[in-house]
Length: 344
Ligand SMILES: [Zn+2]
Ligand SMILES: [Zn+2]
Image 1 (cartoon, rainbow, N blue to C red):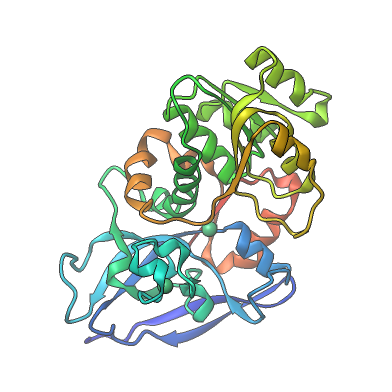
Image 2 (image 1 turned 180 degrees about the horizontal axis):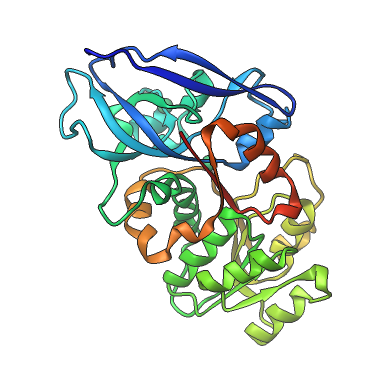
């Protein structure tokens, strides 16, 4: 490589505290590419790290794994990609050798980890990744949309697992970024009713814009039970997606489901042990399953992003240098944030 590239890299150094360090960008290894980052979105996990509450990420830690940019350097063995390609990246790393990987089920890899956890976060000017994890952006998608393909892939994975059928009634608990994307995808999967519940009116408005047919705000005295009963004639929802991660919503997912219905749990629980009405499971023959991350979901997310109008989720934009302010804003409920995007 002729020119020397220097990258500013943002990290969380202590609870509620960030800084930047600069480092030269080394030439890529044979199977790697260097990407000039153009847009990088904050994720719930970044906020957990900022609050020093992430169970598997000790501080200091680089952050950011939802991003897009341009390829500026390619390793000698890389094929099918070129300098100047606009791309996004599937940011997980897998071992390739465990049973799950050998079955092609890499999302369940025993050694699953993320690029940012080994010191290369996307809140930076440049990032170096394996060429195999790179996905070119279609011309119709902006860099900002490209930065939201990762959370959309999480939603795609959950909705595919939930196996939505034509004409079903689906209840989505929680209208954070993932809940909103899940609701949008459920509608496009053929659900005739998509009910979304959340305590924030602006999130419910966004849910309606994305395809929710009914919204419920329990904080405004609206009862979720009533909405589900009205929509299903008292039978209960065919499918429920829990996108909050609390005992209360997990129990709702079990109790508002119809007999033999299927609940898919996507939320991350801070309280890792909860109490559930277990006889509902037995008597109603309901199924409850988890959904984590993605596996072969990026190509689908790339095809669905434009139709959903994924950029609608972006409520705030900051220059990269204002990382601290971006994180503080995202944590403050008064700011009505859904997705916060940073630009180097
Ligand atoms: Zn994420
Ligand atoms: Zn593996």
